Image (cartoon, one colour):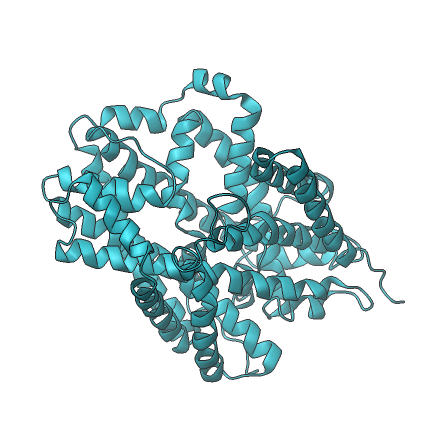
Length: 487
């Protein structure tokens, strides 16, 4: 490969990294689980968990990237001691990025579809049943979903084809700044709606009674889980941006900036959505139904709702595209390093590959809807999401932490030296025991609990089987981390 590219500006790095972290989960999940778990009290727990879980893992990814100057395709090869097996994780990282895009490109297509519907007034004046049917009809049409998936793939790869500075950084900066401006406008509008106070109270007022009802342990685990997943850690999606970063600033401060920006988007999304739902007597849901059924109904009741709906789905399109662009850049870097392709070749070949790989998720809602791989009512998209969210993200994060902290890995001294190169916030070295021993344990607990919550509803036999699967994957990761360096 040619000499490694660098970001042109610090702002570019922060906005591109935040663009990767800012995903659809910030919008269709965070506001709902916040309200359901005690409002502002949950937010406080979430921020604590973000500092204890997300921030240190993000620093590990950035450090590995900046020190190696490679994607995860070669980063571990460069930094690991000879004779160890850390580099075997690269195939899991490659698989994770492709798997994520196998369904995320489809969902990004949904956003583009609905942005166009709102801009053209396609849903204006429709009753709730008609709006629900519009979403169902889209899912039932593989042709319609394929067209919009291909549009999202071509837009994102077209941007990546221009290069890091001229494409990914320049365009994502504009997209993220527009996204934040749209969010602020939408949030202010939401706060002046009639009867919005009930929704704002549901979202932001501490409800200790609700925490007592649910159980503090369950609320804490919900905060830990979302803090862990919100930054898209574990598959190298953030590591790649560390590899494009110069040595001007210390990594702890850079990670704080990205984490705060991601949190701002999540909190503001709640202010946009929850008061609007309550203002018009609609119970906010979690998941796709919130975006594609509940909110279009809300916009139809608003004065100027077609304008506000169009603005909302343009904002959602920017949020989805920023993630797709970031992960595509990682895929391009990986394939360029593994196969020694130039950027143009990698773009052309990956366009075809991603389009083909995205088809199972699309067909899973219609032609292949009879396939329910992880239980009744599940789809192929659910399987792909399960592999990424419940396996590759936590297991990859565990490996990054172990690699940076263990003596037979990159090692704590090398890690700290890289993290504290430059100016800005210094990494608190006193938390070394926490990173070495407590943080890996917390990741393992989250990983196991995720499996338990997913499969306990299917009965004891199914639960035992899947817990054994989780144990096998966990053992595999520790096998990568157990090799002894050659003398």
